[in-house]
Length: 548
Image (cartoon, rainbow, N blue to C red; front, side, top):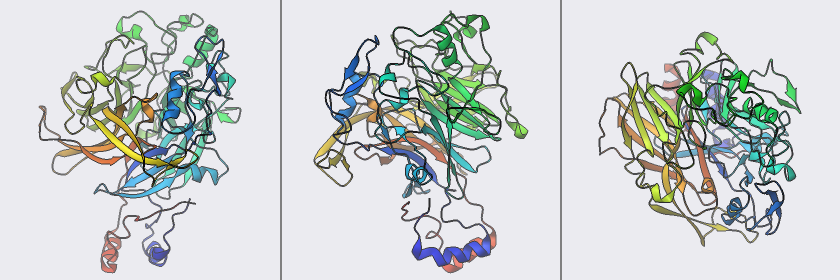
């Protein structure tokens, strides 16, 4: 991928030769936001078209809406696996919250002869994580073409569930790790067989190993053999990949589950065969194999991996530590038999479909004793304005346990409708400059977050919002990028602190992950030279970028 900067080419070439640090494609110093635009049109789906099998596995469902946005996602009401693949891009913002560019990663992959896509309405995909050495940012998608249906619930080549309701319309599809070099903007894609029947949500690169989180399994009826459930359990939760040592199936790498097998005797029983965490660790009766480790949020702090679970009717929706403290220090790796434990003080109440509780998503540590947790809300419009969990939770560690100090919600306008306008072309595709169409939705809480500690003793946290609407799939709603500044030392809520909307997704667009990259280190002579040339603020940020 190459950015077009013809007017600056001579100056940039000169600076690069003299300093050895300038790079027009550098993403260092940026706020990065992963995003996707719906790529379909009215012909992507036809009314009456065959979709996935019904929940009983006895007959195919049929589409009730064509491929035009947003009504296409009403097909989710008849096909619980419904999704449409779309492209992936990275948007860049400077420290003043001004968008400075956009990097088309799907086009970059296509230039290498590789398919790369996300499932447009899958809200937990495309989290962004900066590698522990600060050189790259990573995310997860699919090795799939655009406008393919139900890919996010397809099997992978290494783990086949014969009961998967999508088998009649999808083939084996690799999940794809995307790695973007922060200095050059170069993209590398690695296909994996993790998360068969479901989706990978996040991945971080640490000491040459990829650590992923996600969920596996999309079993229908009749229920698959217990041996298949055991395979899916070993294919879910935290997965690790070292590409230099892993083998492959169907052209994709086979990953290794991270987590001690909690109950080896539970294999072939259909209940309790979990890797890493089981509710039996909390004194509860074992539940459905593989579902206690349905993780989605992920971060590394002080060489320790932390993950969250916030959805599904099994397990516990809370924040977890993966393996021992400092396992990643000094080039280390998290052992495959690591124990996964709930952070002391965090929720230990079972998640069920009948009760409302916390729904944690992204996590960010300001320091060793201050943690911020994004809660997306429960997805119910009636609860959006009154949830006791949704928003940005601040937790502090007292030396023994974590204590929730308060939840920041001011400015999010939880449950209050906002409208995004746009247009469609005659074929039903999105017209980014068009008018005449509108989409109404409301904020329900927060999904992925990142942050920075400021010199004045405050922190600034960036987040993407979750939504509630009348759409067939709320993951397809245009959401927002927001930020807030909080006093690090506060343990009681300051009501003057409020969220600011940085960006509202356009009609047919969704925002997914956020990451902050470290600034480009500059030698004094380089900075002085830029100042002398009068180019500070001009060369530092890309005013316009196009990819090819």
